[in-house]
Image (cartoon, rainbow, N blue to C red):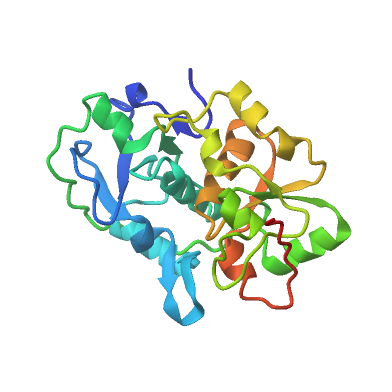
Amino acid sequence: MTRPGLLAVDQLEGGGWTVVEILAEPPAGGGHLPGAVATTLHRSFALQRPGRNLDYDLPSAEEFAAEMARLGLTPGANVVFADEGMNRWATRAYWLCRYYGHAGEVRVLDGGLPAARAAGLATAGAPSAATPAAYPTPAVAEPRLRVTADELAAAIRAGTVTACDVRTTAEYTGATAMSGRAGHLPGAIHVEWARCLTPDGRFLDDAGLRRVLAPYLEGGGELVTYCQGGIRASLTWFALDVLLGRPAQLYAGSWEDWAQRPDLPAEVSVT
């Protein structure tokens, strides 16, 4: 069965896809998909900016275009992202392509490289060397997909948003403080991101996703997902917006952005 935004491993061959592997640092080890090029999350799709205390910052349009060009992709390329991060790195790349208006088809390889290796498809000993391409800087971004801290704070005050906290329970309650601050966005509902996946790292079917994400779907407000840096939250965004067809936004800055703003409120529920 074909699902929007996803590609199953048995659909990979013969589809004319450019495969981009998003590898762990250091790589987890194992074979690679023939012809695939490789990168890492921090190299391409979530930038570390020590001067701003950010580990997962959103690439600018110029940075996005430069990375796509480095990976040998053109704006019309049909690309599938295969990761070693339980789909969440691939969904971040997918979201970025949607946000910056990539014209070609974009898919997430469901289950990522582990699924490809288990199916015997990752037969190459190393990724292929990318041939740089021309990728113009996107002129516009899709505002529907993203919300800023100030926009989110206003929506919380107005009571028009369902803030979807997808972090661990300890992060949500405040038992574990991240970015120097404990807690969660006021009124946020907690459903950990990994509950969207089967034990082998594939997405649940739609019925399973509706069951797990019911607290969000029944929240009554506009759906906004967040985590620590917009990576785990991209997976839940993908489940809501792409797979279930429920419009959602990503708070790309997430907690590492919010926590650094003393003017923004937080709640702690640890007992």
